Amino acid sequence: MGWRKSTPDETYTEEDIASRLADELPQWSFKDGWIRRKYKTSGWKSTLMVVNTAGHLAEAAWHHPAMTVSYAFVNVKLQNHAAKGITDKDFELAKKIEEVVGWQPSEEGGALEGTPDDPRFKYLKYD
Image (tube, rainbow, N blue to C red; front, side, top):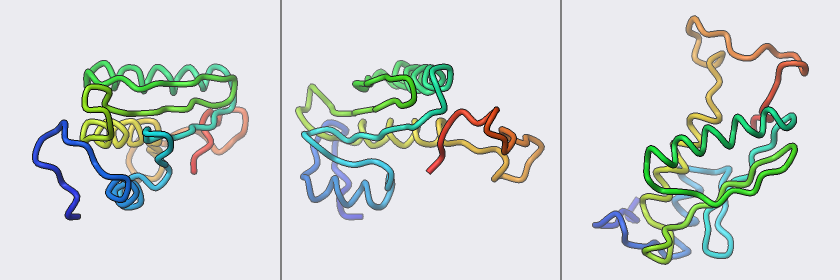
């Protein structure tokens, strides 16, 4: 974990990006200067839920991803444009998006049951 930078806008090397993704965000990848993740959904309504969730988190963080939206998937790409690379802002927002979009209450053992294990109700294809 020697990749921690001293300021939020310092960029990471490709090697450090790969290391952090492997350690912290294994479903994300680095390509063409962006960290990215494809969320597979069960259809349009589900896609909009993912888009709105990521959009809310991005606005709250004041760090906005590029997104490609289709019927059954959402691609989320992050890059710090001002810094011209990948910074802590990108990793932190990616982690928050991953945490919220991928949340499965049934795995926590609490009172919330989560989405029934029935194709009629599944909206996200969890990895």
